[in-house]
Length: 255
Image (cartoon, rainbow, N blue to C red; front, side):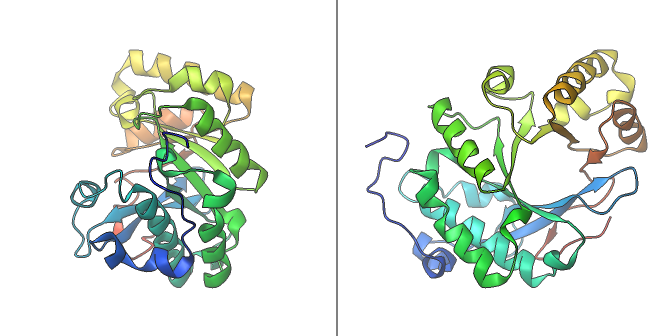
């Protein structure tokens, strides 16, 4: 059995994934928009885990370990889909739901996606609205495994994304092997980019590579109009950050 999934595999259904007490703790989701700064509709809402009373993600993630990682990953997907559907995301023109996932929690992508598809069917959210983000900062012990997951998701019509690009373990090596639909530029690259020639040069290089590879860029952590405009000048039309809206617990904030 793969060391990526150390516990015996058990397919978890939709009802079980919604059963937070099975994890030993409860959680909910906040949502933050990813906007089109050129005036188009909201590109996506990212689902961000929160405590039941709105506590930060760290208080929840601190309770995730090897024993419950798979169940937590599955439960997050179902919770995000259920809440987004109940808030009317499916009625927003082309708007996607972005879900962070834990690649080390997935045993076989074709099997572990079942509860996600079941949740989409149950709550009326088209599965082609889903975007799956893996954070570049999560250490992936087997990059081939991540590529298998992304390849399977691409075949199913999901959008694939690498979050926090430029800040973690994978970077250009992963990009040379597999090209996701989306790269999200880490906020360390976007913060004060308007006054940093070095950051501008780096982002310009990434933007050129992304254009040649057919990859969409999203700028994260945007807090000022100057950051927004500088990134837009480099062709980064999709952006996310406090300038547009803060995450809202169990709500879809409008930018």
